Image (cartoon, rainbow, N blue to C red; front, side):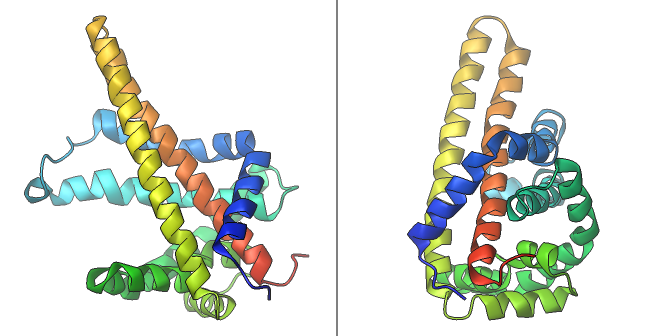
Length: 236
């Protein structure tokens, strides 16, 4: 097992994603981009305040898109892990592994959620130790949900600080991408509306942030694969 550094992991992830970005984008877009656009255009309206959030909004604007995007993330992880795999093979592997992966994520979400409620850093540390590697582990090694969590914990032994630092860097990156994408979408919306193309503006306002969401999903999948490849034995 190699010692990780947050900076080196970021470089490894960036290199792997850039080298195969067109294939990764078209692989993940149906699961991370299209659902986000559909929810924005046809789903319940976004809440105007925290008090206005309903169960229906949480389901259709957060839970369902996140679940679908997680499948795309798993396929992206497989494509980065197995550089010679085809998109069809990546989708097949993700389909076979997704039930176990989803159950592992659900089981690990309780301690991670408690950590985030108590203090943000313990929650990120637990996420780095329990859940961050689980997609790559299930694709490379298989196992039951709790076996995935145990394996992720073992692989990240002594690496929790560096993985947490990487997640903090990634969190700032996600926030930055989100702000830029939302701002670009809003600007295009204003331009289109000023030209009498309100429907086009609304579509662009939904599309541009969804593209940002797709890129983030690819990055998370690539990062999980990159970290696993450094921490585990070489793939056969």
